[in-house]
Length: 227
Ligand code: MN
Image (cartoon, rainbow, N blue to C red; front, side, top):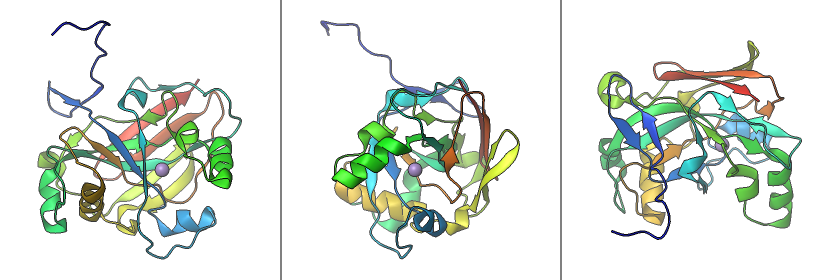
């Protein structure tokens, strides 16, 4: 094949205990999936239908450095369990969904909250608040063959050593298989897709120089510095 321009590299993530890398296809993100976070953002915590937005795969950050983005003075951390798919399809049944999971990771859905709030108010799409450059720091992928499929475990974010977000995977409103099934009715899921599964309460602003350490018990750890 002859291309008119250089072909962009495939974004990918390292895999624990493997020399192979995980090629990333799409990044789906789920909103308001922990009741306490829905409440802190001013919404009803009842089990309303899940909703989704996307980030582009080339917004993944792997080198531990998160550059404070342009056009915002209120950039928030959202620590999230990330699900990495080995297979996809449409209309996946809840019972069959777990078999499509390759593994899990710890991710940060970094958010220009001021721009997101403006877009919400105007009823416009969220991309400028959510899908900016390097908005998706992510850890290595940990295969389910090593850790199974975690359904509980502390989800904690520390900023400069101070605990800011503190939740548990057992508080997810929509469970991982339900999210996969739901998404697969709206999109054709594919091998290499990532799903950011929503954040627990305690989101807040970051500043240049902050060191963020996110941990999900039984999964992995992610450290970044805001530069
Ligand atoms: Mn989020």
